[in-house]
Image (tube, rainbow, N blue to C red; front, side):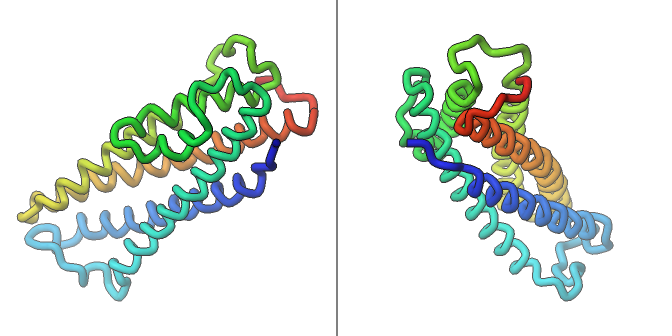
Length: 212
């Protein structure tokens, strides 16, 4: 049974936009610290003025978790729809569209394979060969997302181990790089979500598809 993913896709896009807002905000705070006198000797939260940094990080983390949950629900719904159109093209059961994200290391490649299966089932001719650069958007989003996850881990470890001003500055530079990559990944994710949702909507309603 087909289920409409449009509402979920709008929610995912809005949440991703919210994540980008916090990336810009927290990135600006990191830059303010790096170019302040405090960076020369020690980290001083007062450099951020009256803004409560802990609240900012808490809100950003909460939004990140909410985004992940809604995205996975959207992803699972599209996987279920793909089962209706081309179940034999799906290399994994629908449950993997949820569980695959939580397998250490496996989450760097399992969801991507599922996304490719969904994409093929959602296009007008599921059994046709992939077009030239057809999966370019999907692959670009996935590479940026996976790289961002790795960069975040490196940044977190550097912050955890930082015991000098120089070490903290180095960690902050990695964090800034992570914010930048996160923004790029979020933009690509929005394009991917809208594109794949549009493909399923077009197929479900029988509308003439745009060139793919």
